Amino acid sequence: MTVAPHFAFKNNVLHAEDVPLTQLAKEHHTPLYVYSRQALRDAWEAYRVAAEGRNVLVCFGMKANSNLAVINEFKKMGSGFDIVSGGELARVLAVGGDPGKVVFSGVGKQVWEMQAALKAGVKCFNVESEAELDRLSQVAADMGQVAPVSLRVNPDVDAHTHPYISTGLKESKFGIPIERAPQVYQHAASLPSLRIEGLDCHIGSQITEAAPYLDALEKLLDLIDQLASQGITIKHLDLGGGIGIRYTNETPVTPKELLDQVFDRLAARKLGHLQIVLEPGRSLVGNAGVLLTEVQYLKHNEAKNFAVVDAAMNDLLRPTLYEAWHDVEPVQPRAGDKQSYDIVGPICESGDWLARDRQLAVEQGDLLAIMSAGAYAFSMASQYNTRPRPAEIMVDGSEVHVIRPRESVDSLFSSEKPLP
Ligand SMILES: *Cc1c(COP(=O)(O)O)cnc(C)c1O
Image 1 (cartoon, helix red, strand yellow):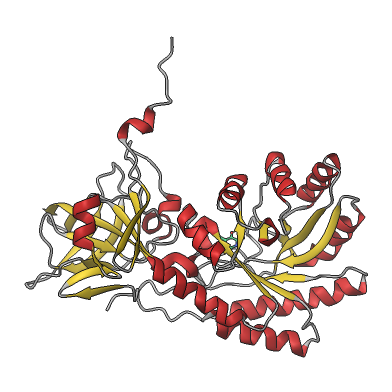
Image 2 (image 1 turned 180 degrees about the horizontal axis):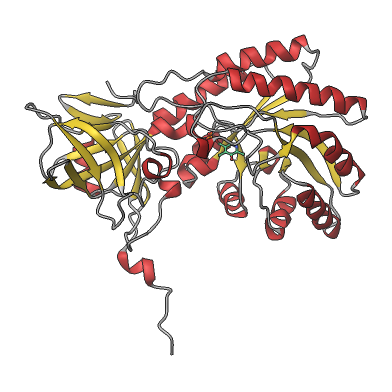
């Protein structure tokens, strides 16, 4: 059993759907990102079922994985998009996504990004400060438009997740403190080129329980009541993303379990007319991908055993950035004694590790699958150490699609020029 149902062993070889990973390594080399189309569909289905019969808009938090093939699948299934840059907006438009289902998040929106989003006609700007409200109103006025806005408030709840991916606490750079929100909404209402549409929060990532969402929800519903008494009507409530996935043995809350409780509370507060927006990223793609890598060398030091592989922190930053755990599966498990290994890359940094203290029976030349690499893997990849970024492959049954070829070394510096 692996953490991801569409990556399973058949005849002792790990497959992506019907394709052996050994075959993909041979044809496309390593390191290699391999995704399962069916896994994307199944992850979407969990949200579709949760939203059925309810006024819910699901906007894929596309920074988790913004490959055009991936976002196009979600577009076809009816998804909107949560974008955090003008670049992500361009990707949505490139696949013919509906701007009317796009929400624009982010703490540092630039003028050109606001202009592009207004021109496209996005559903809403999730605004994070008064200064941003002022700038947005000015940009919209200059274009003769009215910008739809939500305020991202910070409800000061603890999402019980890693500090680097916890965004809803008071100390966070994100959002507007909830106590100040009524004042800031008044300011928004006073600006001529803004139209108040909603209320937004995003409390963190890899959240496995419903409780932090429900704590935030209560505070947001109180705020909506208070705003109503000031004559400000909220049409949609955006609860952000953040639902976790199984990296090893977690049992995260499902979208349906969460929305059942959310809609119970809306009904109890007579706020059933509100549209609920969700911005899931990781939970739509995380377990739809693996990073396939080959063991280059085994190294046995006094204190530790190392498996030096051809993938590195530039291909998968999460372990070193968040001390994140990714399961490691040998693609063709060997019989024999297991030893404890750190799985490390070739980059000149001590932080270049992918996994630590894993019990493995492994030899030079073996293939390893770093599991749950569909989210925040390629999308965070860099070319550090002049390492071309790996290819991305989408498997669909027994079909194999290259959705992004491996970068060439030449392409990494072809636009650079020595001084005259
Ligand atoms: C990153 C992000 C998301 C997606 O978060 P996941 O944990 O991947 O679901 C959604 N909304 C905002 C504002 C984000 O910054």
